[in-house]
Image (cartoon, rainbow, N blue to C red):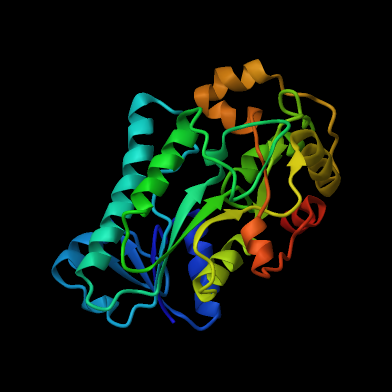
Length: 294
């Protein structure tokens, strides 16, 4: 297949491109900047595509992962970039497809599990209602609304959980206290953590491209979420470090500001759609995932 990826130089995008190439697919990276080079992949810019979309002749799929990282302090300017970058990317994909005479068969658009809101007692799947109760949940609701403007093709909205990878993403920061021997539960430790191994993350995107029966929201989380306390125990075991030093919520709030909600509040999210369509996770349990990553 011929597949275009936006955000191909990002954390998930780089790993996805490698996976797709290993599966024998032809991959094109779409970027805002001609300097955003991805090794062994042709990169085209949005500006180039406005005047010449010949690179997309015979295109089968687009995977839209573009968006400003949320792993930064949420100042007013940062919030504007986080929202604007996601809406702009979805708008550009919609405009590109509108101009194409032969449309791609599918667009896989990134989204987030924050759309369900937070809870220590509820369980969420793709049928659960949207609950825009905070900044991230409102961002994701707008993001999916923008993706709904993409017409003429199958749309899959992948609601990404906490992606575990040894080198990038949130995990290295979460593991640092354990490396220093001062790891422990964060806040109450009761908040749910819906996670997914990076290998399963890229595999499920490929699965959504290939499976024509999958339409709409798809939760990109492992089938066995854990509480923060359970995650800490598993991480301590994998790293052979103690899990004795709780990190009070007020310290996180002082250091990270509103961003601290990512670690202090959570959701128990299940991948109902993937399981119903027969996707098999390599890493269903956090112990095995962390043992592999560590």
